[in-house]
Length: 403
Ligand SMILES: Nc1ncnc2c1ncn2[C@@H]1O[C@H](COP(=O)(O)OP(=O)(O)OP(=O)(O)O)[C@@H](O)[C@H]1O
Ligand SMILES: [Mg+2]
Image 1: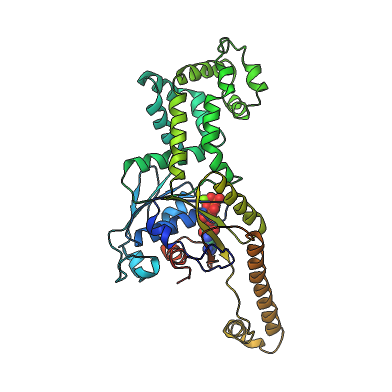
Image 2 (image 1 turned 90 degrees about the vertical axis):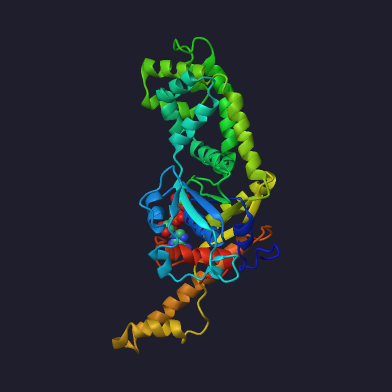
């Protein structure tokens, strides 16, 4: 671990992997949140912990990387003793194993995918005042559209699922991937937005007498409820009004339960064993977003484990006559003296400049930011779609150094 200075790139997340109960990967779209979550899961298992990774997307590639046929709402165990991983000849110590001999002991890796509808349905079941009402809500077309379209629902359901998994008491370490939202901050806002939606003015307007007869629809539109406009686009005319009226009548009495649950989720995230792993790629926009996110965590009393700078270019050695250029020259045996060498030198310069610029951008973006640690994860050659790639990232996260 570093001493709080983000200028020092060689840090690691070993303590968090060994001690945290919840790790949430968050960051801008496409920076590597899902990959980092999976790699943290592998590191957790190798550290001897019973670990579950809750992914949001993209299920198929991650499932393949973990040797699973598919991922769904049920946790499925990843075979860490199978041939795929044995072939890698992994050194347990490199992956953060707490066992002095380097062999992982008792650790398990499980993975699952968030199923929003199932999670929302269970939430309705839990809070509905009667079974009839729960059934009526679940069958309601407005509910079905709303439950998958309301902005922030996915983020909220990820948190709700996290809470359920936490309650089950089955897991040492829960790793939560976050959805590819426009802004990572949406994730933090989700519980509050959900409760204010549920207890909000909009509902009161909708529940006024006359709603079912159609008199309220102008007010709904007037309230600027874009989610409702989306619903309105899918369920039309009187059907919409009837379903809306029924939906909100059945929802009566459930708001307090929802609100309480949202508060519990926030409390769980505020515990010192719940930590956010901020992921950014080494370009200014995702770095800026990471900066905002860290500020928000602090404001909300939430804990950052550290920042992962993912897909950073490895630094190029200074000496242009070194091994790197030899390799390029070897690839061009027929044109040793000519343009190939000049081209190779230019290419090397470009790559070196890019690697240096990325480090300057990271340093500039994180200037003055206090975060427990920073880990640089190098750009791997090709996508991460097998356990070997995940293992390389896992070991970097655990030790600060790529294997
Ligand atoms: N260190 C790395 N080296 C090379 N490729 C990487 C690395 N990390 C992630 N990738 C690749 O980058 C792509 C995006 O990664 P990933 O899906 O994890 O991002 P994400 O932040 O979850 O995206 P989204 O916001 O869409 O959910 C994937 O194809 C993944 O294999
Ligand atoms: Mg993702």
